[in-house]
Length: 171
Image 1 (cartoon, one colour):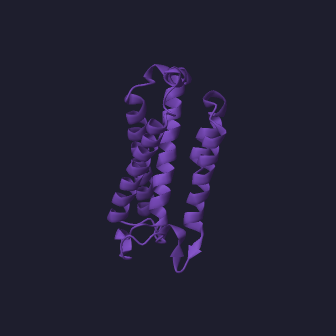
Image 2 (cartoon, one colour; image 1 turned 135 degrees about the horizontal axis):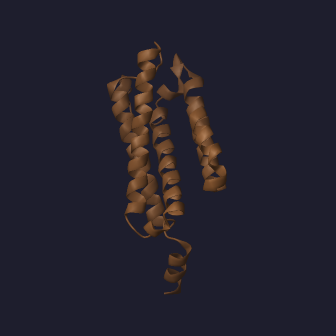
């Protein structure tokens, strides 16, 4: 968390993030910290089943707080990457690349997060991170969040620049 805060904080001036994006990032941080710190029964919020899609079955339980936070967090990550690409590479506006690369980048950062969790499991006993199925489901929900964010941006027209929107609205 401190690394992410430092990265965003250090790039505030050059990136000029929208306020809504900073709130979304702050919300992700809050959800993440609550997930590991708020006790629920004999475990923590991350382990809690929020919507019972499957019966509680250890790591194969769907839909857990952890999975929702992964989808949300890496959806926000894809949004940030899309924003930075659009800002620094405006020539990509109107292309599929402007949507595909941020989704792939967010999924790669999600995989990096899983590597960090793996290192934590090897280094510290009782991390409550989970095993193979947990990692696989985390990667799936990271991808769903990243792809979902890019679909929302593409379908709402947020991905088009102002000039494109003006030209479309005139016709």
